[in-house]
Image 1 (cartoon, helix red, strand yellow):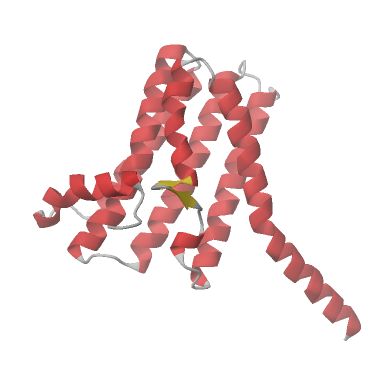
Image 2 (image 1 turned 45 degrees about the horizontal axis):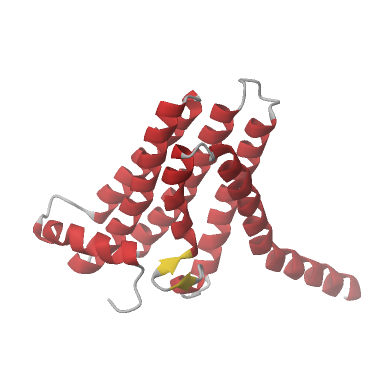
Length: 207
């Protein structure tokens, strides 16, 4: 397990007892992660502090559980391309649910409120990024190249900070910064496709 992120190591240790339970499939855990994230989004959408705290805890748990499915698949030899892509899609849907829930909860109820608009944009970028990620994976890019890591922590592990930040009352700054980050991340992933499209247009004109 050398080189694995800390949360992934913990997930592997926790799911090890499930390796001998035939009724539990890795995709079941993936689905549980999605349900937790959707529940978190609904709690955030309520707009009150108590619900936001529960939503933050639920979403952090969802992201942790998201590691458990892959570990169980590796332990039981049930890894599959379908399961991998399903996990990818669930990750995108979960992130979209987070941004939509935060946008609605931080707004005043009008669809023209900037938190709602920002939440919709960030959610859309999360889904687009998921599609692009699947395209990258289909091109046989190594999975570990998607996120940089340092000292046992990956860039995506910053999502766990949502719990203390919510408790400190910094949910709105977190929402704004993470939404902007999601949009930028999506644009960065789109850039190679724009470059290829431009090259294709130039070649077409020359021909």
